[in-house]
Image (cartoon, rainbow, N blue to C red; front, side):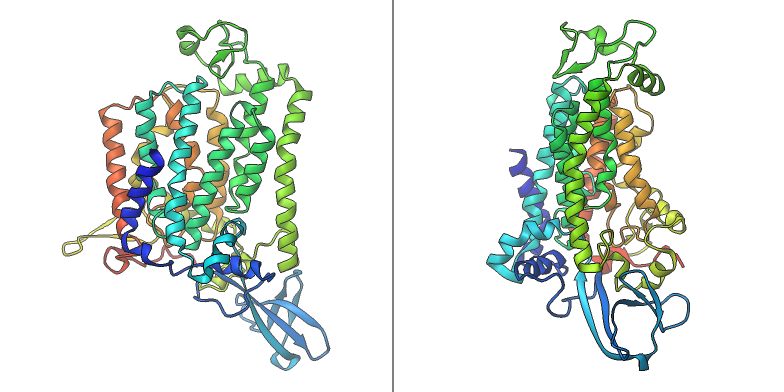
Length: 485
């Protein structure tokens, strides 16, 4: 029922977008190339947005090199090869030149699209795919919330879980991301699904190998996703390390809602004070079954590293490096900035922090009366209930690992050369939104009138984004950049 309701709502918000594919179909193009055994595009890209472009040069001395001419530094003859060599190549040194384009994004979405592209080719409707696939994610989030409830970590009722599921579906940036198609958003939707599956497998360390597989596959959709590894590590340590003494009666650990000492779970267990994170960590280390924990960690790590090895081999075949997906060779307006500062640098933090935390709408004295930056709105404007997570009302054994699983991807986002532009809200936050929903579930906040008012505000704001983004850009959105030289 959740899937059906969400799918219909997403389709209604998508509206006329469903008539055809979106303007940006990198994964559809990549799927077609893979079906024909190609690692690069056969022809020129269909648009000028975010393609990796290499120059393949045959020099007069007989050498062949692949790479890019550097725009940073002032010398137009400086050339960086895919193997990291820096050469000076003047026009008279070049016998022939060929430009080759690649999709630089991690390739799992393209693999998933291959059966559909085999049937429909480049006419495949990525918007419809995103609507139908995106509707799966609220259902998966509901399953996560129900598992937290059934296993004793959340006191939420079924009605509360439905409110939180509605918040995720319609009150976060997931809403607009699911209704517009486009390469970047398809990756977010697939990454979110894998994150939810990872959580379901990792909770109580029930299926560490499966959790590791989902985490590894997440890397092939959104590279920051594996940095949420603290959750599986924390669950393994909790499973094989008994709960520490709190100085009073220790609260027995629970699995499946039952106490591990054989007794029934009581209200006293639930209301007893939780130990501090530091105290819990010390006690875990002292009493940890290290052999069992190590075996579980290895079971989780092996599939994740196996996926990473496959990704590395694919990267090497295309770019002569196992660590290069192709973003270093992006042919975009800010190529010079990337070449100067790299893809990740402290230089970008202030811009990205502003986009994430403080960007608000412009209020105008004339129509359309409100305009939004294409850097997006503050996360606390589009989903204000997330501010509750700054100070939880109740401690949970899951919280430390969940906060770390949000923090590590967030650090990458803040250092990254792009804020997420163009976006309605901070789309990169989808890499950890599932963990934010879990923190809301276990944090002890009562879903009373105030919380529900914040949820309804979020639904209203994100409905506006889902309807207007990339449909009324010239009216409600402006392109002024938060300047980063």
